[in-house]
Length: 484
Ligand code: NAP
Image 1 (tube, rainbow, N blue to C red):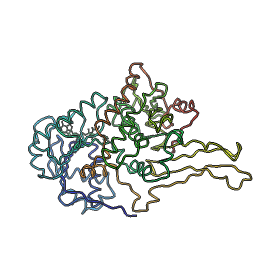
Image 2 (spheres, rainbow, N blue to C red; image 1 turned 60 degrees about the vertical axis):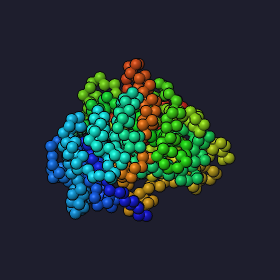
Image 3 (cartoon, protein in one colour; image 1 turned 45 degrees about the horizontal axis):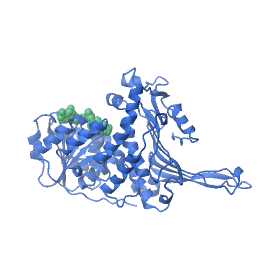
Image 4 (tube, helix red, strand yellow; image 1 turned 180 degrees about the horizontal axis):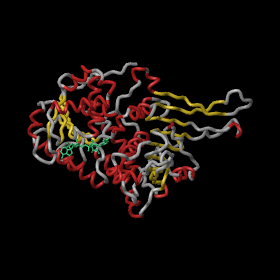
């Protein structure tokens, strides 16, 4: 199967923070890949903007180096690289001052899609929005892309929403959660709403519980000061895991349209019960075999920030009443694995007798690595006398199933940036969604702060703190393994 490329209309894209880490590793490589993929018309303009004094050629030299490092497959094609770079430029700009703004405005084309990517610290978002408008760059076709973190609590998220709303309409604001750009995350919707097989069973009558795991092997190196203020709850749960929870739990939207999808996600967040303190386990990694632990890495010997969270959530609505959702995420764990396990109930009665064994069906949706789906079904154990039951996996790796042309899924940023250009907000968070997510997480964080909660230690390279296992065991359940 060959994927279809739908070309976009001509556009100008300004990357504020065009010299930063995200621009280097993600944004420019994603743009380059879409350019190589034939999705761009001829006359696109990409402008980097930051305080560093550079001219177009100086910036192009930097970009060429980043693309060689972060898109080595594509940048080996020198002609393509040169053609891409000819569309790239740079304007030195001070986000909080006057420098560079008239020059930036002069470079942009009239009457075409204009996207401003705010790849800078959140404290600059308001200043950028204000100056884009003040310098006459905000037209009906203007869009702004805002990176996470979108606030650090409900109050700051509300303030940020209000600031942006002072300059742009909601339909012009694209709040990125790159998880939503992952192919398999979009596949969650395709699997649920494109098949007849699953949706009739997708409720508390048939589903015992759901596990959402985002396990990372990396630590917090390089983001120490941000992370020590944020922790896993703000960095991962409030956004990525909540988004996965919404997509798994939401009602079918009437159509795949931005507000229809986001209305349904919002209803899920609003139906979440407050989490009881004994339904949460916080952890912090400690070093083993000479590796530094969390506190050494962040240089804060008394840090009580969590690098791991496991929690049990409940959605109080007709579909999910009584079905727990177990969420866990952590750093420096045994393996990198993002997976959603839908754990079905046992068959109500075994006609084969107690000795045959009983196995519940499990639908595992792997987001990374090796994106795909596995359905565990029960069959007769081959070759045995009598009737003994055994689980077998019906395993589908998307890369294998879809053929060699589709072995490499587009990076989430490729998809999302092209959606910005197309004006499609379906995979971006709406302001009220972000606020509702903070409204759910804020009391949990406040509870830790007021009680002086200290995270449980867990070893680097383990599956997390033992208490996370107990959280499940108390309910007579087990986590599905984090696969090494
Ligand atoms: P970074 O490496 O620190 O880059 C910041 C960029 O902003 C630089 O280009 C910097 O260049 C520019 N800048 C800083 N102050 C400025 C000012 N006053 N006026 C104009 N430009 C200014 O940060 P980053 O890691 O790329 O992150 C950017 C944003 O993305 C942050 O909000 C971050 O939370 C978010 N994010 C990053 C990642 C990631 O993997 N890096 C992942 C998710 C979200 P000059 O110093 O030359 O001005």
